[in-house]
Amino acid sequence: MSYVATAAVRGKDGWSAAELELSGAADIEEVADQLREVDPYAEVSLLFVEADDTYLVIMRLDQGEDLRVFGSDSAFAHESRLGAMLLGDIEIPALEIEEAIAEAEAENEDEDEDEPAASPAADPVGDADLLADLGVSAHRLLATCAGEGMLPADITSEVGQAIGCGDELEELREA
Image (cartoon, rainbow, N blue to C red; front, side, top):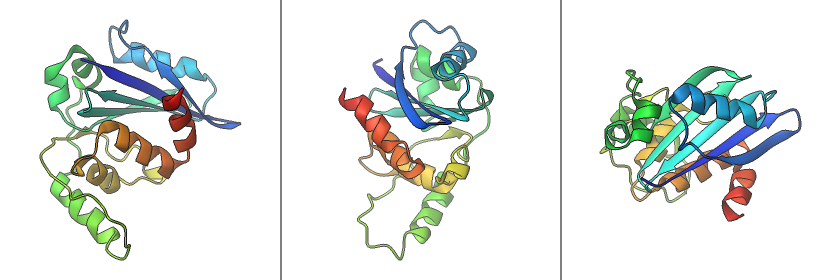
């Protein structure tokens, strides 16, 4: 399974991004250690793992502690070693996707943006609220993940723009 693992960390000088290699990691704690090493003094450290243009996992550490994880689809844990490592221990389902889509659509009713139609086919797991304090509510994250035609890279880009590290993520992607 092919993947891209991109860290976005916010330190005293703002956001920076780096790519991580996860193939040697034995468990999620080793992945968290790699994320901590990007900037040991970061206020917020995020890891976006995009796999096979199908799955997205977002990990978050605040000041190097309190690991929180969200996965766009629980099927990832069953389909690969990487997915099992990142999502295998998560038992908490994310909010109901149908509810999230309805709320996100209600929030966007007044906007004239062409949003992709949402599909509740995925089974998101984990902490969908992990980016709420950065400006991406659980409902918005779930609705974005469920958007028809949205690839993990699209979701990462949209989330990155919303939280303020989109330029750094895009610069790394283009490098």
